[in-house]
Image 1 (cartoon, rainbow, N blue to C red):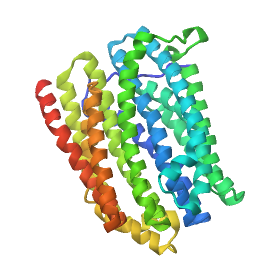
Image 2 (tube, rainbow, N blue to C red):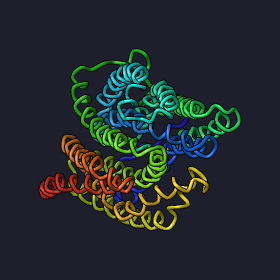
Image 3 (cartoon, helix red, strand yellow):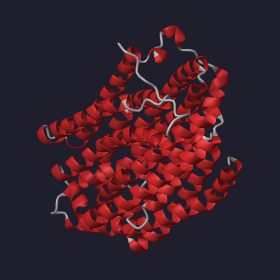
Image 4 (cartoon, helix red, strand yellow):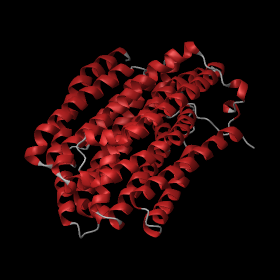
Length: 445
């Protein structure tokens, strides 16, 4: 079996490298989002508004856990990218084995605690009683599948740190398609409701994890580990923990903010919860591209930081900035003209109250989509340089401003207040990180 080509981004044309590296990430994460979007669309259309609201109430909790794991893997991959840039394969393998051991143990603990605390968490968020049982069972099943989430993302992050972002993409596409098929079987054909949608997601995630493990074992010799190769390096673990804890906190903080904001939405009632679930999926599809442009730029910067090539780092950032601006303007126009049709995908046109509430939210958000594009890229810049505390602090500031604003604005403006709270959060974030970015930019000239 032939060896797969890994991409060295420390030389050559910058624009094509970032685009070539980023496109598979964008496509892959679009398929990641189809997991939850498929659940919401099929449950909303074939079960009803209360079932859609139940999935929506559980989603912020689920996303905190998902992005906690993604953040851990992202922090590990930055260190892997640096060692790969240095061509230090001994250290690279030790980082990978230590990451697998420590991350795996943490994920198992997360599953145990989360499974038994699901109902308590939802009660804390003032989840309406009529959707509480469905939301709890959905969340508990999703917790079981976190083991597959970790396995997939740690292997995918390892491959991406070495410039191979295509392999995990193919497996993700296959499992996303499988998830849609299973959603239809469990929910539409077998009438398993919300629980059926959750089981469809877990099974599909398990398939993507298995495919990723098999690919690495047979096609990437440098990552082929035997039992004796699994070594826990305590010294490297300190560095891994430093990187991963900050990136994980940054990722979880953003979604912890959404988790807390759900507490401001739930008192507005089932219609607002269902509408926010729908518009959140639309926001996710918009912003995942912005995040992946930033992640692609992070990978580029991390490799060049390992080489000390600051001229390429600056040029790579500017290339990423152009991509963010062009994309954000185009997608804002699309959402503006098709907002009603996009929301109707989740409920059908008969749920006019849900569609109207979602449309009011999106009319504000289309004016703001450029801001997360810029903030994501600045975050990617600092992350690629290994300055994780700046990215964490910026996210904390953003979350603080957004959550406080949501609780003040939602009682007066309803779901539109949640959109306005996003504006407050991004203003806070830019106010914090802009001076630090300017200082770093001058130093790296």
